[in-house]
Length: 439
Image 1 (cartoon, helix red, strand yellow):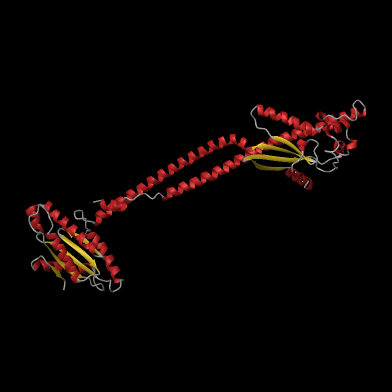
Image 2 (cartoon, helix red, strand yellow; image 1 turned 180 degrees about the vertical axis):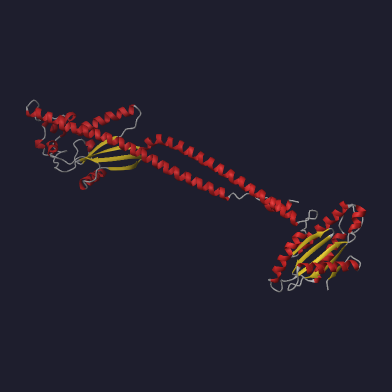
């Protein structure tokens, strides 16, 4: 009985919302992951730069100490002639020399403790030490520092040989009078300085010029390896969370959809039961009452060549005797067979339907046809029923019928069915096994 409901409502659950949710969650995961990675990278860079600023602050403090504590003592000794005026030792008097060497020692300590270190470099346009001679690119940056005195530093990420480096450059303070003792006229420079470096490079500087800058480079790809592990763990946890969320939402959604399907199926089954005959699977009188009013309304508004309706009422001849002679089970088989024949025959029509009114009475509604076709339909049904093979039945099955055409401008359902019923009655009076048309 519920096969029609299963056919119409046992459909696959629409999973499009779940696919949309999956795409949304994956998009969120991607956006969050990318944002998280860049934020972690930014945090790492800020942390390293903060450490670098502490190093630079320490270097400036050390250079301040050299220039304001050590050098004045040396110069005083020279005035007192305790030390020769031509005395010069970079290990004591060169702030850049001391800074570079201390930084190198510091880096070695860091590396021995498996910590990351900055690469220190001093770049000058007129360097005494060839190691400090600026490259063409560094000369451009030095020129930029001299042209824009508000430029405190340059901070950027460079890619070298496929690896990222964090690059930081800060200019020296502009030359002052004390700087020219060693970087001005070679004639006023200490003899030991000239003996060590010559009288060409590192001289003839001017007050106010920025003669050099320091750079620091850190291999960012190495630093990020440690942070990438944390990123992978956090991303994995986030993925699991979103996966569990998706699973939970999917479970709730599928459960709700199955409930809706079950309710729809039960509703369809109840509706099917209410409108169909249990035995023959044809529509019943209740369905006919609903359909008839709809059909009449549609036909009244339809074009003239389509506003055509025929009703044929059928009755199995001597059906009570079949039940009495062969039993009600055989009678039920006869009713079922007639129901199958009716369903098969009306398939040949564009607009047709069949009903069981009760007992052995059946009704066929046909639209857009004529009396000849109705007569032919009756004959086809009667012949099919005569040829029906019902093993328990030892006699032929015959039917009588009455047909009428609906008068759409004035007819009501009751009038039409009454005329068809009267025509059926006449068929029985005239000897059965025939179709009578209402005159």
